[in-house]
Image (cartoon, rainbow, N blue to C red):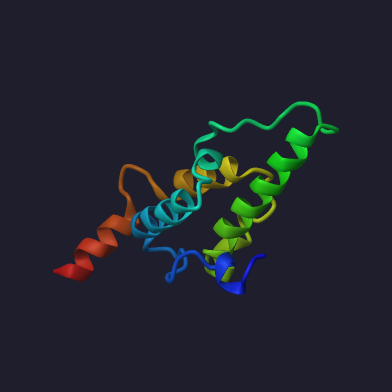
Length: 113
């Protein structure tokens, strides 16, 4: 049985400035629930959609997707909520927030000074 607290894995939602802290916290929370392989792609979607393996994969993938989406601020989640797999969401968020200039890290450094 899921409790309402099961859908909120981290206390701070992803915003424009906290990607690295958020990613670490969400990875720890998802790993603690034994679902990190959905983020890494180590658990592949079964090809036979009529199999019990596909049903289980779909259930678990949907759960991890909901954890990720529910850990984002409202304006950010809109960009990612229709991406079909947890791995694709995880990769898209990373690609959106990590680049050569990495603004979230810069913001955190400036805030600490």
